[in-house]
Image 1 (cartoon, helix red, strand yellow):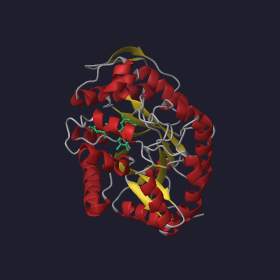
Image 2 (tube, helix red, strand yellow):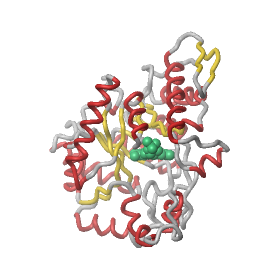
Image 3 (tube, protein in one colour):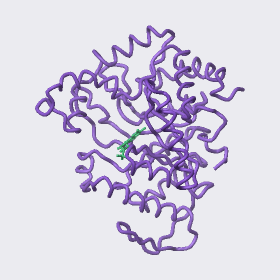
Amino acid sequence: MSDSRYQMYNNNAFKLGLFGANCSSGRAWNVLPERWKADWESCETMARLADEGGMDFILPIGRWKGYGGETDFQGTTFETITWATGLLACTKRIMCFGTVHAPLFNPLVAAKQMVTADHVGRGRFGLNIVVGWNEPEFQMAGIEQRNHGGRYEYAEEWISAMKKMWSETEPFDYGGDYLRLHNVVAKPKLYRDASPLIINAGQSETGRAFAMRHCHAFFTNFREADVQKSADFVARFKADAKAQEGRDVNVYTQGHVVCRPTRKEAEEYFHYLTTEGADYGALTEALRLKGITPETAPDFDKQLKELPPRNVGYPIVGSPEDVAEKFARMHGAGLSGIAFSLVNYVDELPFLIQEVLPRMQKLGLRETG
Ligand SMILES: Cc1cc2nc3c(=O)[nH]c(=O)nc-3n(C[C@H](O)[C@H](O)[C@H](O)COP(=O)(O)O)c2cc1C
């Protein structure tokens, strides 16, 4: 997998990706007028800016139902394989992922959709596998959600069958506990390789073991308060993947960036975003989905108040120097890159590209020239 077509394997020591832009409000639970609308024109503009500005990848969220509240947070979402296909058509070098719920997509159909996306992008499509967790989304699809272990067992068969569709040149049968496929043929193959770049963000032991077996990259959360702990986790994960599966798996993280000319401006905006600007109705629903309600949790109000800065993802807030330095700390912990969200991707990306990327070059995190 040293092929340079994968921006995830280019010479940038710390890769940068945009996360969540296929969903209304991205990942910021906010009611502000500038919040992300996720309409196609904005998505296309974002992708072109990111592509031309030297970003490495675009990672959508697999989301089917919004969280209600004043804005119906993430209630307007584009399906991710078709979204990626459109973005791949209007970009030249950036990678675009589909975030695909294994239980919701028939593998024969999904394998071919991804082949189509990959041809449109001349080999730049990537797959983020999710097994799902959100019960209302499964109810909408009329599909019963399996228990946690069963979700990964199914995903194991799903990806194994698809890998065969991407590689077998003769008709084949696939017989598993969940999938029984007969006389399968699938042409064309992917644009260049026998597999797209595959990533996953399962946090359980089962999810991690799945990533070690099947994925090229794994996503985990970064702990700034204990960088050493993050570094130990990354080192252990990579060593285990090598020892148990003989595979090199890179580790990435996620976050939300607020970057302004000064640290003070950035911190003030982040405070506003996560207090006055927060969509507390949608956040209440997020807690309810986890079984946390005013009836079940005596400290419900406190939990709700503390949620906005946490739910947005790991916050990276500050001046361009601060943001570049935070990325350097992540890189120092062994992380290969970050998928991050912005309140408004189109408004905020140009400043980031102009001010943060050159600082990252000086720190040795991005290729120069
Ligand atoms: C960076 C990142 C991206 C994720 N994207 C999605 C997503 O788009 N859709 C989704 O249903 N779950 C998503 N998840 C949730 C994970 O797929 C997974 O269900 C969760 O981390 C729990 O791990 P487990 O499945 O090992 O228990 C994401 C998690 C992370 C950390």
